Each structure stands twice: as structure tokens, then as C-alpha cells.
Image 1 (spheres, rainbow, N blue to C red):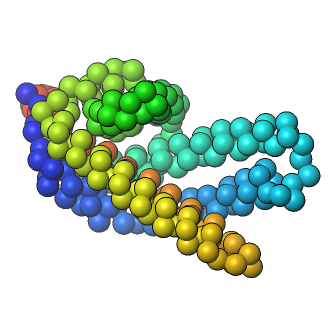
Image 2 (cartoon, one colour):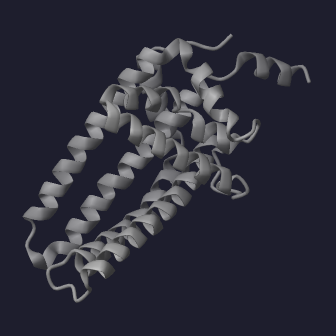
Length: 232
């Protein structure tokens, strides 16, 4: 029997995770915000900048390489944050990193296809597969089984999670647009500050999404498994 959680419970659980793991969130920002700013600087100046000396083909290959490298680094950082919030410790083992990256890539592809075809299917996938990162990090079941497990655990709270995911996306889009507009309004001499602001907005969204995942994971735990562990 899976638990059912309301929108308010899921919403509060997300911010409780951030409050309970302030140190991990601050360390995450301290590491990823500068790296994100550097990534933006390299991409804008070396790849798409008007002064770039690279050929069109080199720019295209460089853009793809930068995107892949940036995505991998982001997934590694997100894995660390997920495990830190899940286990509430700053000491993290990386033995679950390969399946985390593999399932994350599959999740991204599935969500992208769902959004490209129709927006609503993409949001439904995002809702029902929201627990996959936590389940893979936990490591109690095979990585590929985490999709079915997440789908089952979120069955009773689908609409509440759907509303939370939509709210999260609205907030992220608004903050990202505001950060981008602010960065563009800065003079060239303050472009570094603009990159830092854009990176901060992006990494703040990652913290919020991870908190949503872990908060929902704790609320929608498997009661049967917990009882079995108590009496084991």
C-alpha cells in the first residue's frame, strides 16, 4: 500500500529538505556556480562570440563537446547533492554514479520526447518518474526497475505531484528569464557578474528540483518495505 501525499505536504517537504541540508546546498552552490559561470564564458566567447576565430565546423563541434562535458559535470554534481540530501551527510560514495548517469540520460531523453510531441505527456513523465534519481541512488533495486517503482509509488499522489512540478517549472522559467535579462543589461565590463548570476539561477533550480525529489521520496516511501526492515 503506497502512501498518499497532498500538495501542501509535498511542497513543505521540499523546503524542509533544503533547511535540513543547508551545508550541502551551500557547498553545492560554492562549487557549481563558478564552474557554471566559466562554462557560460567559454561557450559565449569561444564558441558563439563574434570575435571567435573558429570555423563553422569547429564551432559546431566545440558547442557539442562543451554541452556534453557540461551535462556530465552537472550530473556528477547533482548525484553528489542527491546522495547528500538522501543520506544527510557530506561524505558521499560514488559507487552509484554510473547507474545514476545512465538513468538520468534515459530520463532526459524520455522527457524531451514527451515535451516535443506534446507538453502534457512530458509533464506527466516528469511527475511519475520524479523518484527515479532517489531510487537509483538508494540502490535497493536494479537501476532500470526504478522507473516502474517510481511510477507505482506516485500513483496515489499523481495530481499533487503534477501541480508541484508545474509550479517548480514556472518558478525556474521566471527566475531564469529574469537572470538572463539582468545579465544582458550589464555593461561588457561586468559580464563576469552576469555569468555568475545566470549560473546561480541555474544551480538554484537544481537544488530546488533535488529537494522536490528527496522530499517526495521520503513522503511516498514503501510502507511494506519499512515494516519488513523493522522486524528483520
